[in-house]
Image (cartoon, rainbow, N blue to C red; front, side):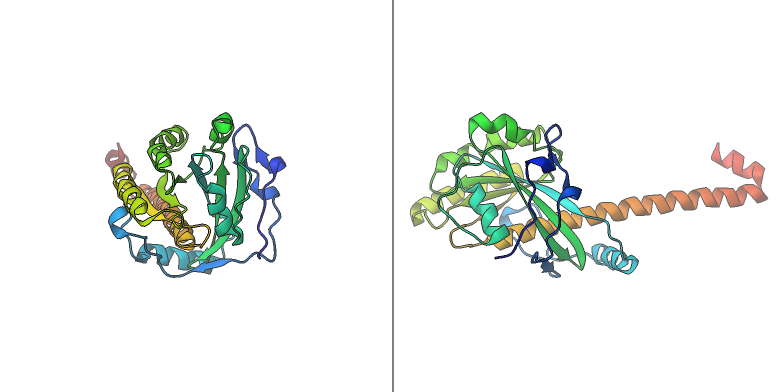
Length: 278
């Protein structure tokens, strides 16, 4: 079993809900995931993300990052929400430490895990926040929603009522987050009968399309689709971050070139430069 970075109560700013990540020691035995290929969704008909490969722009940007040996920490905050006992903690634990235990206690407030990837040779970290589903902890958990770039909406295949409550959880998170990537995840796939599974899945797919989420059924017990889900989350958010960085860099270069161009012209033809800029 691999060691994981942990964030304890003292490592969290309880006013803002942000992790004090710099205070967390990085485990030297951490198993790092390497992604050079683009992971595909569970069902391409039920995802708003139609990319099937890394774009030329992203690959070029990553090569430039590598050649520059940039050590900037790139990370994304992921929150996991849903009704109590739908399997949120089992989902996170199965991915992060490859463990499954039916005797997990209800989450109080939030728990936190971190997982490190190398995507196109660039280090990238997912901060995964496992939030409480109990109503009495809702105010505590919701304070940690701020700044999340991904929301995993979890329902239980054996409890269809948990699917009907997803819209409530989505509304709560959207009050604190700005245009996050959404994933609708059905847990305990192994426990549902075939007829119940098909019925619930049909409803889940409709909901996923309605809210613009990517749909994925999983089983924490067997591990089915767990790795696929988080690899998708990592690659989609990484690509979004790299494109944003690239755009901001290009804007700066354009601005610098414009200033230099005007300075050069102003030395030769001050009058024309002033009239053309006015």
